[in-house]
Image 1 (tube, rainbow, N blue to C red):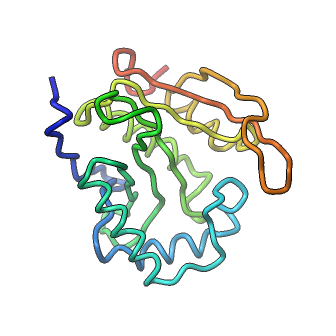
Image 2 (image 1 turned 135 degrees about the vertical axis):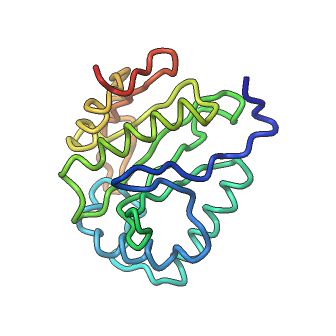
Length: 196
């Protein structure tokens, strides 16, 4: 059994199509380019999106991500092209369901605009679930999305995650409206690679 007190997070998961890995110093330029080019695509469901992010700010962000990764407080992951020259999106294992010893994390994800709607998100999520249940301590992984984010919902369903809950009007937005969140989950003991 894995000892979470002495856990060193795995660095990367490689496929023929993409590499999922921790952000490293120097990745800021790739993050700046991907998020700035995808602002219109991201802004509806990703409140952190900005129309432009400069490379210095993005470099600070990736260095913070790297520090959190090494400290086991948050595991933000980049999804890179096989040659490492392009950021296809971002994901991560976020400790929103307790500390590391709870062995549960929430997966978040965004895919850059010109790579979206081609099945990449589903393939990345399946890879993250497979990696998470093999080389990480996770026993439970969750995915949350706005109920209006049809693409996100489909990614979770196609990857083999099960809808567990619908939290009606649980988030109040700045304009005063409320959004509903759907919660999906996968358990290690039931995971079969999303081939449901």
